Length: 185
Image (cartoon, rainbow, N blue to C red; front, side, top):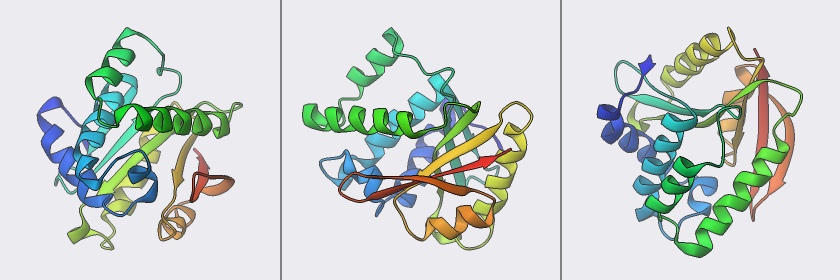
């Protein structure tokens, strides 16, 4: 894996869009699935600003991680939110509400990295690529973070995370369940 660059943005958007077509949580803040690429362009920009964006060397998987210690409400963040008026006014309110609830649920007593999005191209899913990629990410972050947190609304993801040492610690409801997992690094 390697850190993504701005040149990778089109491929990152493609990977995430293909991976999250049916994801309730990603689609929750959108007017239609047609907005998924815009959502991921926005999310990737947030990742570059407040964390890290990674891509597998074979360009089949990527991840957007947010470091809550870097995340702040500043002019860059406001400009980014305005620049990506992906959601319309009602949807921005939904997004900000969801982000606030997620931030409240995340651990206060741990220095963690938030795995915001992990996507694997559908044609190579169930071949171990996501497992290797997630292992590489946890190995990288364990040198300077205490934990990795992730949330999912996709039930098939639960065994994936649990097999890799993540444990459930909370559930919130947004018209569907979102399950919160963490892994001590």
